[in-house]
Length: 135
Image 1: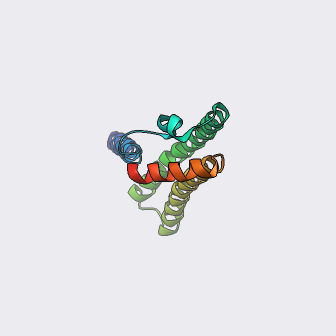
Image 2 (image 1 turned 60 degrees about the horizontal axis):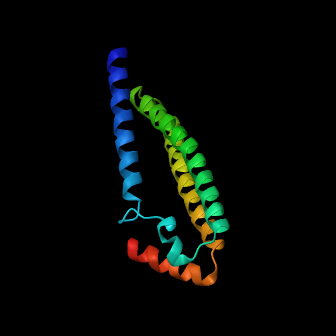
Image 3 (image 1 turned 60 degrees about the vertical axis):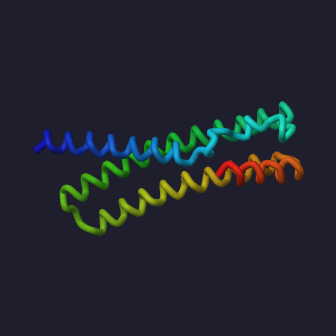
């Protein structure tokens, strides 16, 4: 029984990692470019670049921690399902998982807005046009 459980957990982790990396790739701009690739077009100052890098660093740190929590929550959910636990516990774990996913999305949106706030009005117009063309 324990051997089967370990195989299932390893498989679940593999599927999760494949989905996560696939999702990370899917959310990148089509051309694989970021705001830094348009530094000259946007006329970003060194200070703006520094601040943008800080925002991205915070985003990466926070989402990495949340993705770890999400992995644990998914594994715990799978255990509850396999053990045929009470549906109340399963519902709570599903809600926990979705709350973590929502928090990741919220942090991403907040970061985009924080970066946009640091741009001048003309830079923001140009950046929005570039983003629209990339996606």
